[in-house]
Length: 206
Length: 122
Image 1 (cartoon, one colour):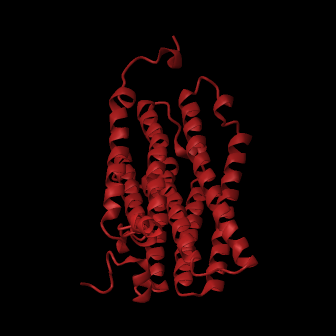
Image 2: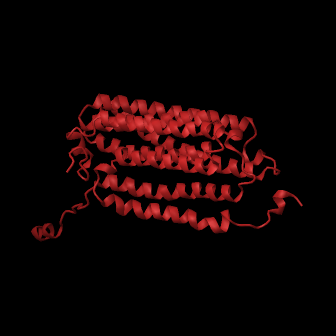
Image 3: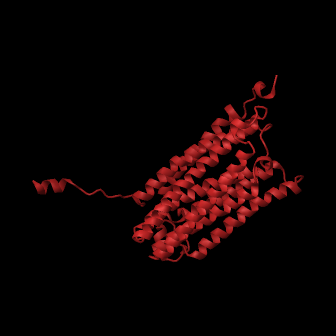
């Protein structure tokens, strides 16, 4: 009886050329693409429809700050790649050090974004504070805060993942299986960088 | 097969072959920074050479540079260079849907030509 039951239970073999974790993160990113398409698509169509009343980026944004934040995110993506390579080479202290730099750079990005938000609030550029005589500015403000706000939220989620990994690394040390975590969390982090690569020119340069 | 680009063999194989070395990461980083600088420089080109660098040219330029930067990130940082073809099954439908969704909104919202009398006054 026991023999018969063991014969019926066959182990499931993943025949895809990709690990379950990586497949899951890519499926999740597929939904994220559609999420940001909604936000960016709304920005594009609203801007085209209201081109005559839309504010110029010179009037409402500080371009060097946006460029600096782009540079910060690119640097953080590079440190993630280097941390993953270090983990694959079993150089775990180096991987932990590079993840800590990524964590710090993520905070720098959010700090700069918080400063930008403070300036907008200080200048009365919140959607409900802008006069109805400037409908384009209201629409700009609404789409700007939606896109950059949700992007910042994604950065925050990435920081939680890196923070957890740093705590584990400090408490018990990183192991070989953490290389997979760094790769999957890194793919998510690069996606967040990718979204900003498009947000930066659309908001600050066009 | 070019040993510098072990397509489809996975990032682990690339690291073992030393093809994903810090030098390669450094080169990608260099191009990403260079392209970011190029997009930022477009601000000054637009201001000083507006007679030859139109608004449309500027939009096309910054978007093309953004696509180039995104390609570098996807290929080298997100490991598309090292993955097998399964990536296309996931990503092509998603990207197509994203593009179609935005294009489908254009006629009804972006190119709508009704009078927004409440915005422009009586």
